[in-house]
Image 1: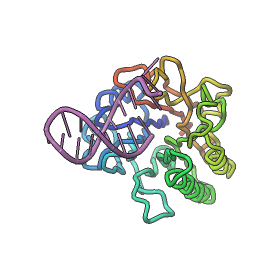
Image 2: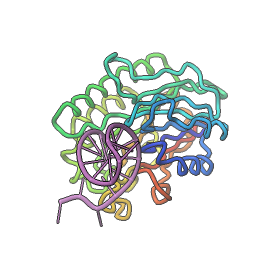
Image 3: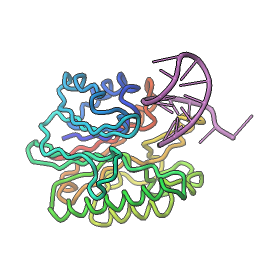
Image 4: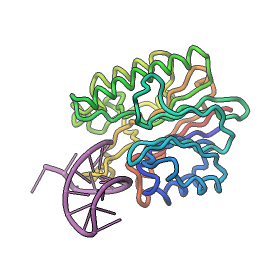
Length: 259
DNA sequence: ATGTCGAATAGGATTCGA
C-alpha cells in the first residue's frame, strides 16, 4: 500500500497540479494539508472520479486537512482530542481497510511563529496533545501512522542553512524536543529509517529563489507505530514536484507498506 | 531590504498567514 502526505497550500490553487501528481504517483492514500477551504468548497467529485474516497476537515481560508483513499475508509474522526475550544482544522484520522486495517492520522501542525508569543504557545500545547494521542495509539497496539506537515525541522542536517532557522519556531529547541518526545514514545520516523545524511528536503520557500538554490528544509514526516514500522518497505520524497507547473511550496512524501 | 504565494475582503489594493 502506497501512502503519501502532501501540503498542497490551497486546493483551488492546486486544482491542476494535484490531480496531475495523483495520476503519476498513484498513491492508494493521500493525506492532504492546507486545503484552505470549507468542506463544501472541496472539489470532491474531481477525486471521486479518479477512484478516491474523500474525507475532509476544512476551515475557511486557512488550514484544513483531507484524506483521499482508493480503499474504503472507516471510523473517520476530525480534530485532535484534548481541547474542545480549538477551532483550527488540523487533524483527521480514519481506518483504511485493505488486507489489514491501518489507522491513518493526517496532521497540519501549527507553524508557531513568531517566537515568543501566543502562536508559539499554541504550537507547543498542540504538540502536547499530539503526544497524548500518540500514546493512545501505542497503548492500543494499533497498526497506525501519523503523517503530515509537522512544521518541525528535526535536526540541523534537515536544513540547507540551519543557522538561518535558529530563532524560527520550526527549529527552536522547544519544538525539536517536543517532536523527539513523541518519537521517543516508540515511533519510527519512516524517512530516517531508510535514508541517512543531509540534503533531503520537503519544503522550499517561494521567496528568494529557495528552490533554485536548493535552500530547503525537511518538515513533512511519517511517524509509525511499531506494528506499522514492521510493514515499512520504502519511503521517498518526490522533490521534482517542486519544479513543476504552479507548485506548492511543499512536495509529496510517500511510503510503501507491505499491506 | 524577505527576489513569494494564496485567500479574504471587496470590487483593487491591502492584510494576514506562511
